Length: 578
Image 1 (cartoon, one colour):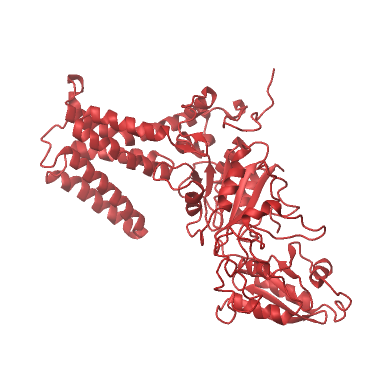
Image 2 (image 1 turned 135 degrees about the horizontal axis):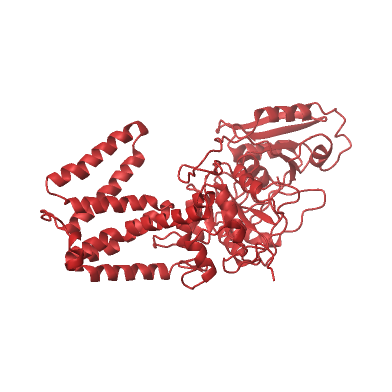
């Protein structure tokens, strides 16, 4: 497993890794860092010919724990004073030529004898004492057993004439496995073992073999629940990073598809993959994102993509999402071909797509599995649901408060408004619907139908009968709730639902002028929101006619000849004619 090569300073990627696969924490993970910090990686020296290295964005194992796992001796004190997240140069701790000393340090740092899943097996290889280190549950037991059988069966005089780098000799002549690395530091050994790889140490050698035999627990690839389609692919991302990258690579077999391996989190060392098409994606975007990921200073990313998003987008209280989440690899592939960037995070079954505009949250894969005319119709239906969710309640309430004109006299309540003011009726219903939705999320499936019946009876029939709500209030709130579920992106739908209070409350206080003032405030929020340099309302503001047409119409795929994302290097999807 080799980490993809670092891109040049201009942010454009080099090769995707010298013949290797993108590293992964599922079956062939991203590689933890060597002793250099993330900011120093731009100056890493090239690996010596014939020998590969494993370098990532995270710190060395134990380095960053401030000595909590380091312990006493010189080699065991790895990490002391280095908890600052990479701002100071970490100290390298090379392997000693004495196997006993190395094992003493590694037992202390890995918690051998305390943590039940740390396995250290001492064997004899070619007449020399050796040891095999692994984490039980993260490796394939059958493969490790075969590895140990190969090592034990090495003749006793095999390593007699090998004075230095016995690990390299074993890699070349004994271990018949394609994914083997040689490392030189205790820090790398700790990182790789905790990432689920197998380490082989040989007495008298200052090098160690790292063999990728991981077998992480993983669920089967299946269709995402939130992005179902009537036709099309049924595969979706899962929690294993390597499988996710393979689903994308299977759809885009371009040698310029870059999957850069990064790591974040001093303790978690979470594996991250930055995906983009070199020569298509705007040059500044991968470099900027990579820099922000490398600057993440935290113990870990327990919430996966969401934790990472809050670091790379900055502290913001604007509810509008500026990255798009998807669990569909075909959606990611389509965006990569358009010049967007995707970010995969280990243990997370979603990909982040960025930049994202308001219009991108209204599109769905179903449109592209139907006829262009049908796809356009579906897009407009979703837009209708959006406007119903956003405007139906405040417009009705504003007309009632201001007094509807004679032509719209039918919109008002047909009976008395009840003992509760209309504004409070809507607010109570809005909160009640949100509480009901949360109750559905946390209710076991066998009880969900019962909860639905109870909620319908309480919020509907009984509330109207006792005079708390009018029929019109219940009707328009229900229509707005249905429109909410027509929005295909959950994050955007929740933001719209929250921003709607900026129109409902002014509508109940001041009528139509209140609605207009609330809409103007929301327009300003949209106007000043940007997603990694792209205006949120693009291509409406600033206008781009070609891209705007594609927003409202599902164009036939053969007619799409250009990429409209600002800054793309290769604008043409097909050579221009004439």
